Amino acid sequence: MHISNFLPQFGSTRTMFVVCGGQQAILYLAHEGIINEIDNVHISDRDYSDEEMSPYEYASTFGPNSFKVRADIVRQLREAVDRSDRLYNPEALYLFVPSYRKDIVLEGLTTKARNKVKKVLLGNYADFSPLQLILIVESYYTAKDEQVPQNKEARKILERTALAH
Image (cartoon, rainbow, N blue to C red; front, top):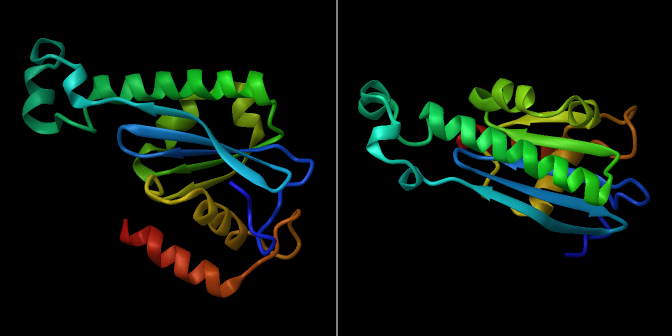
């Protein structure tokens, strides 16, 4: 997908966007005015039998909060990020993750991937389009930062949107 000329083009800098939701993660690569999905990780509750869940997990947190599901999504995310890192060699990584998942996702990444993280953007952005994600990245930067200019009005709108999810 082509990136509008009004948005950052990520010229020579290969940039990976890692968007995490409850049981899904999508990876995008932005480079030279194009952003494309490069990987997708999804785990369903139905992938686990009742025997794999403890009675306490099943009764209180079965679903996206289950320990088994969380552990598997983090493991699969780490594998997807590593695979994409080897294939595309991105220089920067933006991590979009709900605040309650931030620590477990960051701890699950390799040191190499963690060192490439430019910004962790808290919120549930799983249903956002790649162009909306670029707007979010653009809105979080100040004029003194790297390549992305600040847009105060877009920042306000996107902060309200993130809080609504």
